[in-house]
Length: 120
Image 1 (cartoon, one colour):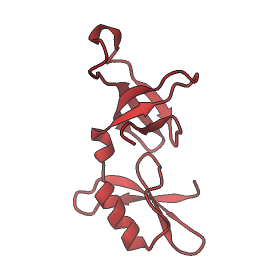
Image 2 (spheres, one colour):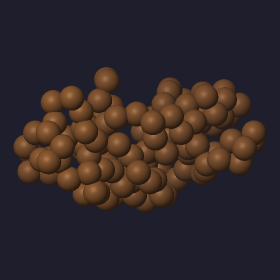
Image 3 (cartoon, one colour):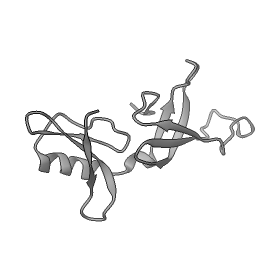
């Protein structure tokens, strides 16, 4: 990702993503995980898109691909900083409570290709 600047939502001052300027003067909106949210567009349109995307990713389940190529695990995002995302396992209907360490968290460097939406 080339140089991008923070986008702060005007309504509540929340950092909801990044705007990356293209060579032709358009802007690529990226969420807090640095994932592209749309094609290059005008600044106001990119800001509106990021405002709409917001921080909903914090309430969603994700799949974390194993570093060793093993099975993906269902996780939730605990924290996002500028350079990292911390995820922890979630308990689903198929999991046995005693076999899942809910306190175990993993910190990933952003951007990461190991994290993907569970419902996508």
